[in-house]
Amino acid sequence: MKRSFVLLISALMLATPCFAHHMAVVVSKENSVDKMTSAQLGKMFRADTKKWPDGKLVVLVFHRASAGESITLQHLNKMSAAQLQAWIAERRDSLKLVDTDQDVLSIVESTPGAVGLVDVRSVNDHVKIVHVDGKLPMEDGYLSH
Image (cartoon, rainbow, N blue to C red; front, side, top):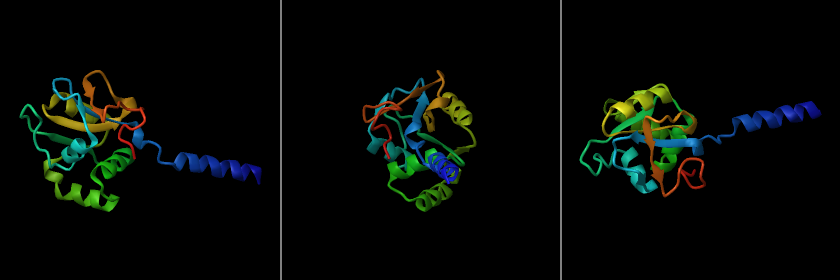
């Protein structure tokens, strides 16, 4: 009985979606934007904002499948999972869809105007993390969900 309880608790802890707050918004080091509000970021990730303040086109880089990214985008865009998937499907040709955080980082580093979400543990010194609502990843309130 005790062993079953421990296994159940362990399984629940592993299944808990605690990863969304570990996402980081990344842009090229050459991008002049250091900080955004969550409302501005939501508009950008919905493709309502199409240009950066310096006039460069916004290039959205999304994972084909990332639970943390999906939860974050759902929260920012105030969409259900189904709505988000439909939105992505409608805009598939205008988004850069990739498989890994390393792919996101590579495109963001080399593409002027690119922006993406990656697990904070994947961030390298070739990109810049954007402050959101005055916070950095791992701080309370950064891409809260």
